[in-house]
Length: 166
Image (cartoon, rainbow, N blue to C red; front, side, top):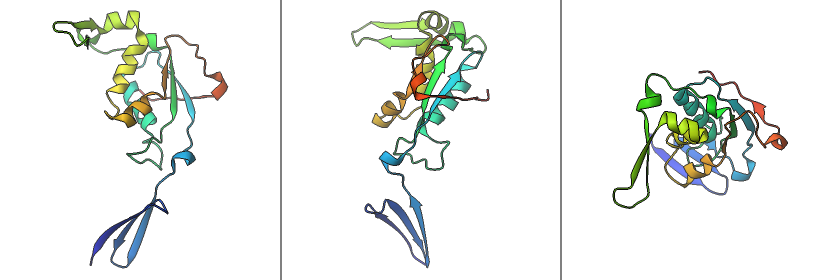
């Protein structure tokens, strides 16, 4: 019994031959991927639990056509980012670091201070660190739109309300 893999670019199929049986996995074409717009309300949601569900939607892992090397995800608009919740003592003990590249120029900011000044940045960093660290992850992160208040400028895309369990 011989196992053989065949990849044919003209058909966009991945074929696996096992003995006399042939199985094919269809790969979606980039221009045929359907992307929807969703609105997520971050009021009283725990940061990490919300970020994992957003990252899953951005990657497209909830769809049956998910392929790791293609961007099959949806657009996510997060509103009320300033009302996000952190558990335990993370507001005072969690630190966000940034570095300019010069010697001795590393700065640290607590989560409480970052939530007061730039609440969008807290959610963006949490989701960014859950995506792939390559150009695919950077393109997936561009589909995430975060706003501190309840208003957003994406009404023309007719986004659906997305209820995330957390």
